[in-house]
Image (tube, rainbow, N blue to C red; front, top):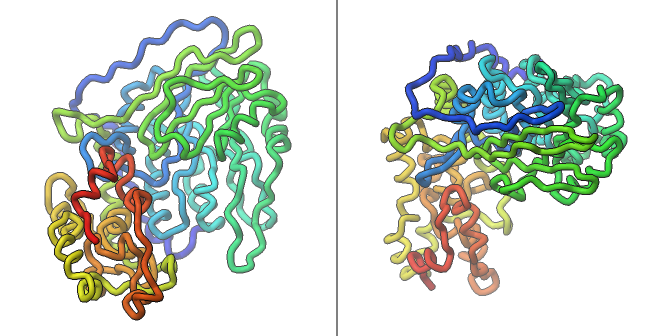
Length: 467
C-alpha cells in the first residue's frame, strides 16, 4: 500500500494517452542488415536521474520523455524490446516521489510500454515501502533486480530476479544488478541483503533457454561492469548504467571473452539501438546506433508526443500545488556549519564586490525564473520548481537558505554565498573565519554540460571578476 500522503495523488485518474500524433518532420529508422542466425533488437535507456525534459537554460538541448515516446512510436517496427536500465530518480525527496510517479506513467504507456525496467541505487534512495507501492501500482512494468533480497519477510517486494521477453523469434532474458544499497540512517537495520554478483547471476539465469540472449543491466562503475564479463554463464550483453559517460560512446566495448558492453548515457538524452546476434556460439553486435533526442528546429513540440507533454506539464503544476518548493527547503545542513546572511550583509564590508555583482546576470537570476513562468517558452510555474530554484537562489535546500520570496527575500538571485558558502561566522569574526577562494568546481554545480554547454570558467570569470 502507498503512504496516505500519496493516496490522493494516485486516486486522480491518469491523463488519457490517446495515441494521437502531431504533424512532424519525418523520422526514418536506420536501415538494418539481415543478420544470419538468431538476433534481438533492443532499444535501451538508463540513468534518467528524474530528468523529465530538458531544463531549457540553453538552446539545442536533447532529451525528454515526450521526445522519447514520440521517437519510440515512430520507430516501432525497428526494435523488439524497450528496456530502461534504472536510476529513474537519484534521491529520496518529495520531488523525487512526484517525478517517479510521472515517469512510471510514461513507461507504462500502452502504446510504447517498456518490457523491462532495472532497479538502481538511485531508486533505492526512496523509502522501500513507498518504492514498492509505486511499483505495485504499475503491475505490467516488469522491474528486475537479482542481487537484492529483502531481509524483512513482511516487506512487499514486487521486483523480479529476471524477465523473459519473446517477440517472434527474438528471445531475451533480462536481469539487473544494483551492486550496492543506500547506507541505513538513524540506526535503522538494513532492509536488504546484497548477494554477490555471481550468486545473483546464477539465480537469474536458472533455467534460461539456450537460444535466449542473456542481458545484464549493471549499476556501478565501468570497471565493475567489465568484471561482470567473467560471470558464468557469460552474459551476451552488459548494459552499464552509470554517470561516467554523459552520452553513449561512439562504439560498443568488447570485454574478455568477446562480451559486448554498451552505455546509454545519462538523463534520458539518448536512445541506444543495439541489435544483438549470436554467431558461432558467441555474441555479436550487428547494429549499434546512439539516437539523440533532439527537438524540431522549425516548430516547437513537433517531435514530442502531446500526451506525454501534457503529463509532464501536469506534474509541474502538481509540484506547485503540493508546496514541494517549501518542503524541499532546509533539508540539509550548510557545508560549513554557518548560517546564510544575504548580500546586504556582505555589502557592508565589500561594497566594491557588491557593485560588480549588481551588474551581472547573477543579480537577475530570480527574475529570469519569474519571466520564464509567464513566457511562451515555458508556460509553467518555473519559480516553484525545486530543480530550477536551486540554481537561482542562495542556499536553497540547506538550513537558513532560501525558502520562498516572501519568507527569504534577501536570498533570491545567485549571491555571494552561493559560491563562497554561508557567511554568518565570517560576518561575526572576519579574521578568524575567512571564507575560502572559489574555483571552477563551484560554478559547475549549475553551469554543467547541459545547462551551460559552452561554459568556460576562465572566460566567464572575467564577467564577474571581483576582489
